[in-house]
Length: 251
Ligand SMILES: NC(=O)c1ccc[n+]([C@@H]2O[C@H](COP(=O)([O-])OP(=O)(O)OC[C@H]3O[C@@H](n4cnc5c(N)ncnc54)[C@H](OP(=O)(O)O)[C@@H]3O)[C@@H](O)[C@H]2O)c1
Image 1 (cartoon, rainbow, N blue to C red):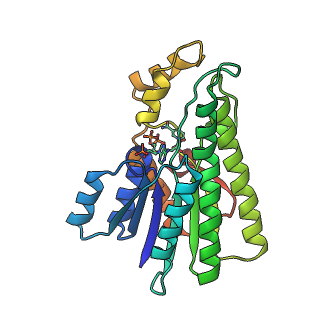
Image 2 (cartoon, rainbow, N blue to C red):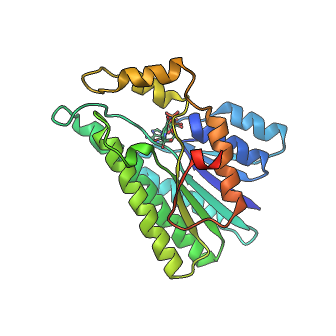
């Protein structure tokens, strides 16, 4: 059997990824602060396997405890493969530097960067110990590669996750590990994160009108399409360790 851990599966891109994986008969472990009843329903209908673990990724203690329990559940003798999708993320704080809220800075760094690093470290260790093939996809953003007025923390944490992916990929290649780590840049999608972005003030986020226009002109992609492209990519195998894959190159 195959297991996939999906962080932030309660809505948006994570929900789409979890749904597609269930359809592919992968056992899904969903991690977020709130559960998604529809995913339980999908699993029931197709005789799939869906488990929800409540976790606030802003808490190091909670993250380590929950992922220790998860790793004990999934790394079994009968497990053929494990997938980890570090998808959960927040865009806040949207504000210019000098006016940032300290707690909001720390939460963003914790959720977007520290948590995926801690989780990857723990899961890679278990995969190497048990010799079970592992594929990790870190969801990144175009904002990792260009500055966006008002998004200094989001741009920085996503840039850091790209470099973490590249460095880990290099290490895995050098030791001829069966583990792969990639990053996935999903483009702009019609999710709650975009609602948060559109609700910013122009002072905090210079480009807010451009993002309102993306919504009005139907330019935001459905998260289901973006999710399906990622699952297809991971299943095709032959992934290049450390590479950032872009949804636009896959569709
Ligand atoms: N939407 C876009 O246009 C866009 C563009 C580029 C990149 N991305 C990236 O795509 C990924 C998914 O974004 P999305 O648009 O699907 O966002 P979303 O709809 O806002 O969903 C975010 C997910 O992250 C989870 N999450 C947030 N804070 C958490 C916390 N403290 N602990 C645990 N889980 C937490 C949420 O679950 P709970 O609230 O239930 O905890 C939710 O499931 C993110 O990494 C984002 O940076 C999005």
